[in-house]
Length: 192
Ligand SMILES: *[C@@H]1O[C@H](CO)[C@@H](O)[C@H](O)[C@H]1NC(C)=O
Ligand SMILES: *[C@@H]1O[C@H](CO)[C@@H](O)[C@H](O)[C@H]1NC(C)=O
Ligand SMILES: *[C@@H]1O[C@H](CO)[C@@H](O)[C@H](O)[C@H]1NC(C)=O
Ligand SMILES: *[C@@H]1O[C@H](CO)[C@@H](O)[C@H](O)[C@H]1NC(C)=O
Image (tube, rainbow, N blue to C red; front, top):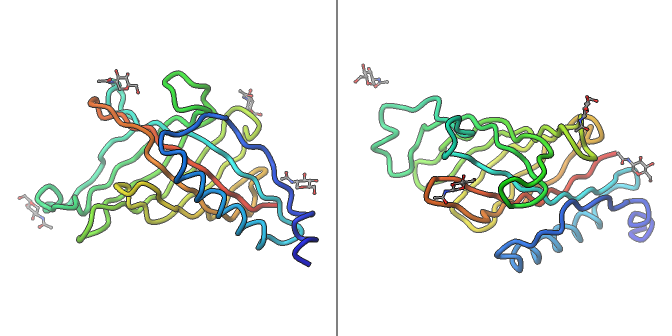
């Protein structure tokens, strides 16, 4: 039965061949996730894995990450509790500045812990170019962004990703003194 499932659970495109700085950890973790998903997907589902990069830009005149709300106590809180920002970050094929843009990661990040710096994130990956143009994916969940690897659930999608379920491994690839960040998103999606 397991073998039948594997035959039907077709593995689709992996975008980009770029290698992350901490490639080993994310590679090991990605492989483990992929094996788990292959073993658990139903015969009707396709498993698609995407390697994407998301750039958070503070250096540009129009920042792609903007604070929109805070509580009175946010800036005296050691965890910035209550800070809410809206993001509209480019999704690219590779980690480099000027890499081909596939769409935008749009949504909210909320500093939502009193005890430890971490985010609640609600993002839509909106694809506007490339093989997934016109489709979107919804990521919602806990993102303790100071950790090397975070796992944020994929809870839905549109287009080819209709009824998607899955998980995204997020790793911070780099940051610079202007405050720009580059994140790697290894997205594993079960869909039909
Ligand atoms: C926040 O601070 C402002 C200005 O000090 C004050 O007027 C307001 O009542 C405070 N709000 C809360 C919820 O404490
Ligand atoms: C993406 O799809 C839209 C709608 O079908 C189309 O107008 C646009 O040209 C496509 N963009 C690219 C870069 O393929
Ligand atoms: C899923 O895989 C089947 C082949 O088994 C294919 O016909 C179908 O188009 C795939 N669906 C998507 C969304 O790629
Ligand atoms: C940080 O990266 C951005 C590109 O995302 C670049 O425009 C900026 O000049 C960089 N800043 C520094 C200090 O290297």
